[in-house]
Length: 284
Image (tube, rainbow, N blue to C red; front, side, top):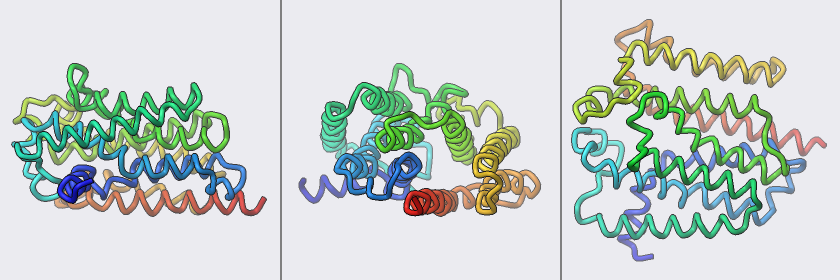
């Protein structure tokens, strides 16, 4: 791949968010495996590479392509993300074609259940941003369609165990991604409203959106602590509901600053779950 194309792929794929697909896949796989030696399975490595780079290129490439009009109102694209230019158009389409081709090729190495899971990931990733469905502009569907970030974990669990994960784990994942999406949309309320987008955050406003985040993350915390059998480490999950609670109680706190610390929290706690899951199999 030419250096310029590779540079564009790197910027569009949003490196800081790779952990949301790749990390979820790794944690799901660790929770489903019987032995740590499963990490040496070629299938695990293949999808590990996919969910870290090509998958994110597909998600955010589609997002950048279809959001060019609405993104022009949002200064975040010039600070935290890459704003594609007219000159990037053909290159971005080529990158999307490559990421799509890799995704389709991977469908052929999976069984029926695996195919259904990967297809659902691609479907949600594409139509979150693309018309005619464009879930991101439909209240409730905007945060619900972010199940696309949970699907890699479900697929990882399935590849490692041959079974789907317990429903409680899937629900916990849904609560977390719903809160994460809604929380991330709160700083964009003004820009999205200007662009004519009716997201859940735009409809609810800042305070009610924070209250819903608090409800989602409180549900997540209750499930995690219960599933962990009140393990002391599980209490760290209370960090999540504490964030919107603090913002509700202290108006001076900046949600913009707090949001960009969440990837570190997600990575740290996800890494802890991975470590505990791996040590569990090693003990056997």
